[in-house]
Amino acid sequence: MPNIATDNTLRILSYNLQVGIKTSRLSHYFTGSWKHLVPHSQRIENLDNTLQFLKTYDLVGLQETDGGSLRSNYINLTEYLAYKAGFPHWHHQVNRNLGHIAKHSNGLLSRIKPYDIEDIRLPGLIPGRQAILAKYGNKNETLAVFVLHLALSKRARLRQLSIISDKVNQYEHAIVMGDLNCKIESEEMRLLFKKTALHQPIEELCTFPSWRPQHHIDHILVTSELEVVKAKPINHVCSDHLPIMMEVKLPDALNF
Image (tube, one colour):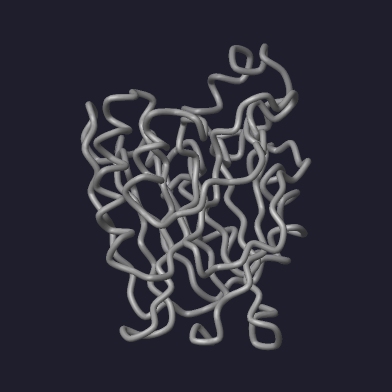
């Protein structure tokens, strides 16, 4: 159960799952590339290894999950994790639908019921990329939670974060999390911080590659009235990214 009912603290996790493919060295990108296309017995076993720590969070943003295709044995991986980890609310969003072969998706697991969920279309070279916007509380006092997986192209990321910035600015309290594919000091992130009230992190939290983290491209960002209690990567190698966590103290007006 979430702990926010007692101390108004929200535990958040963002995780690029790499579709349940365990990658612990560079060579695995080549030897395991077939796992992106066809089912394999270790995928569900690998995801099951994440369940114990997933259960300790209130909100989980997922990237590189699958909406139920051949490679995942037609299992919606977001739904599977929600059921196995005991999250009563979940949402998935297909960003690239390759039919029976693959359904590249974002996902959200939540112990709190959102009053609304919106899929935000984002520009890019390949159509279909979106972001999840989940709204908690009520229309007078809303916590807006965004789950993103941005493009590899800098030009596309600039356009995508311009749209996200406009959306963030519609809410006093916002959380933006996901694989943004760019570092804090990048031009794209400078644009985001300039246009919004999102805080720039105090330190770099490196999450990629998971076996030797050197790059801080996975982020959880919050607006000014949300107090960050703790933030760190989790040393759990079940993907080519490490998950990143944050504990946030909510203002009294945001009481779920």
